Image (cartoon, rainbow, N blue to C red; front, side):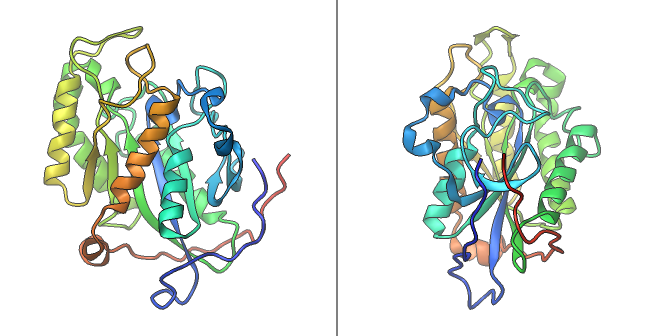
Length: 292
């Protein structure tokens, strides 16, 4: 990953925000958010260049231009050693559409469930929030407003293995979203998530996740009942032969779909019901560390 050079933030809403602002997006979930089956050999050469309009909080806890590989982190796992998740297309798509620099911070761990592992107040949830807060506190560009603009979630496969967890998923996801918004002080924060593509008969190296259909139904219900939540279909995305993970192409398309969903939020919603407050944090760094 390369050091980010000095630049001027492109802000098309300067009249609304006299101080330059930057949108921060959070990514979280389990192995399909990690990108466990990604392979950098599948990435076109053009995507291997640093994305200077997308800032990325990397595995060294340092801000820099996003560049493949983005994984692994100490808390995640990629089966091929190094790889990427949907962030490589998600950030670029949003930055290009808005003509603005954006920032991404990610915390995802494979093989984790929402019922216990991601339960608010638990270890994973707390670690995610600690990482987000640390990334904001160490944001490298002085005198900017950091706007928490969206939360992206790809998770649910592990809960599809257990009937009790599957039946509780709708309520658990609702509680998770509520707590995230409360802890980030963003009551209307857009929450975009991918629906699992599992069915009750899919054979995988990890067994049969019999309750995938229950998870999918729960995810649909949440998007219908909880304002500001958006479910993204993934069942037609390119999958790895293991039948539980996206392959590289599927992950890149997932990032595009996440971005497209966020970008499709109507302007009246973003200014009214889904208006995002701009939170100004003390910035303790004015320059980036040199990358080795």
